[in-house]
Length: 138
Image (cartoon, rainbow, N blue to C red; front, side):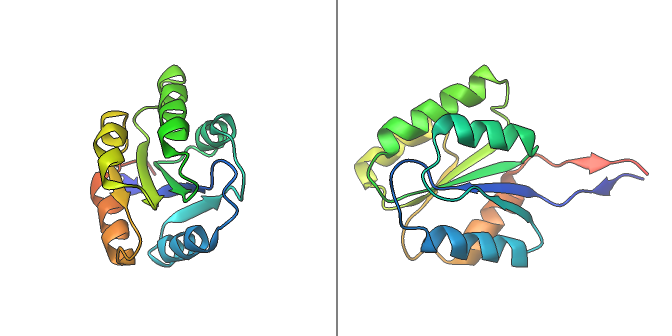
């Protein structure tokens, strides 16, 4: 009988945004919820994020963007995921994203956007319910 593997999440801070407290809080909450978390640190390029996601075989990429560069960064990341045939990786976004930008980001492949004040449990539950299940055989 196959066993379920823990969900693997890459938490990334793309662009020049230097504020990572929220990313660290969500990374800790996901770990506490039993997920494996890879935190890439500050100032990651879209290429670095997608490369790390593929190398680490993650189920989900969580981007934390406070810089306002989401309309440039997210389409680049989704294009790279498509190029690498990795668009099955769940892509979620957290940060200060204006309401008017959210529909286009979702059209570009973002599955959910979690703004300031979103309960941690909301994010955890969404990831659990939306990643593609992985199993391994004994």
